[in-house]
Image 1 (cartoon, rainbow, N blue to C red):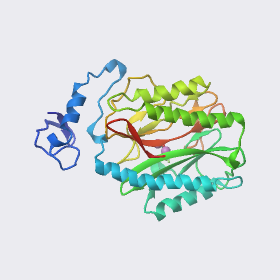
Image 2 (image 1 turned 90 degrees about the vertical axis):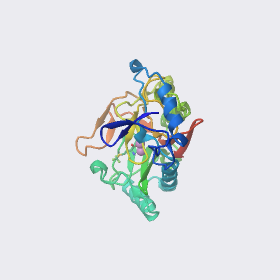
Image 3 (image 1 turned 90 degrees about the horizontal axis):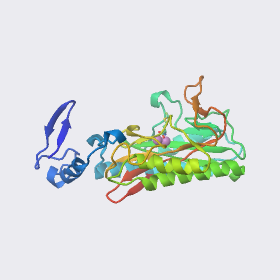
Image 4 (image 1 turned 180 degrees about the horizontal axis):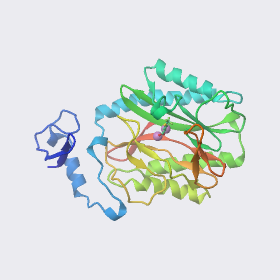
Length: 304
Ligand code: MF3
Ligand code: CO
Ligand code: CO
């Protein structure tokens, strides 16, 4: 039996034969009853900031199917960007191509008008950490390192991923290494995500690899739960201690999206557009992002 929240602040115990809180339509005993019992077994250590995941961020198989379909469009957009990124192209042209790709497949670019963001995708070049605004005036040149971050909504389901692109295919050894190590940070973070373990394991794995390579980890921004909304609990920091934060359980969907700086971790938001985030020291920054699902046995990548 488990205490659940119905509506705003009414709490009551679920009965075995009640319909499950997840919305599957199945009886509680045949659906999430054992799952709740397993969470209840945990002695959450408050000193480590360990918390139980709210039911609201647990996705049903139907939700996961929805996110999967959204991710097909999202990944296709990122593939298309690989074909278009080349010296001389401006980032507004890339934005328009991404917009057209998503909308012609029935999707909605989630970034467009999100809290006033003016474009359909974020394009962040060199010292821009994230939230770069596509513009006719930003013309890519050989050796630039570029992050394109795409979020698609399809039938109400969000998928979110970003990749780095090297303009013209070659750059300095130092930029190439930053891009490669940042990807490895994301991959190590994803491998560290396990059901019935804690969220902090992800950031611990990302940060250990970044710091071993002499880089710093941005902590002002991070990953997030995603699925029925763009940004959900939990906030995913990429520099954490193992065994801390929220318990990871099957059905949770979240992003791992480390922003790694070659210099100091400090960032600043552009005072003119209120969006573009740059490194304070104007050294390079890189980011990769995937949307992952926590499964019974590990994790599965949904969008990359
Ligand atoms: N896609 C970004 C993320 O990974 C969020 C961009 S919000 C926007 O969470 F408004 F800048 F588009
Ligand atoms: Co993103
Ligand atoms: Co994200």
